[in-house]
Length: 95
Image (cartoon, rainbow, N blue to C red; front, side, top):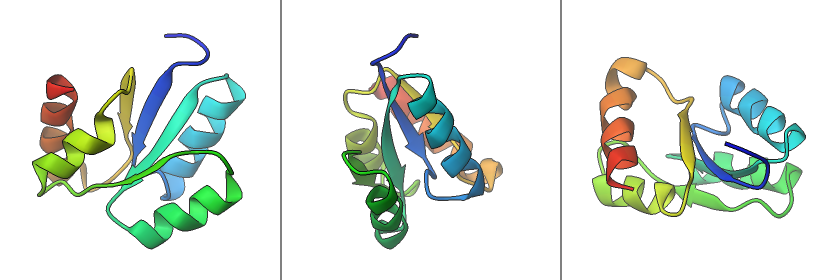
């Protein structure tokens, strides 16, 4: 992994997600903001101009596939992990 690579951050607008997005930007990566709450994504994108947003939910595999399309990696910051981990991992494997 190196600078310029695309990393989808699922749960980007949450407490941990915001830290991950900031760190990715600082290291030269291109974060894609993903999560279930379109309003939360929009608000974060307004504070980080130029970043792509992709609404997705763990109970909709097609939306997860769209959110992860073209990403070099994914970081799952959405909880609870008992609920979100498996669907996000499965989508990452399909991407």
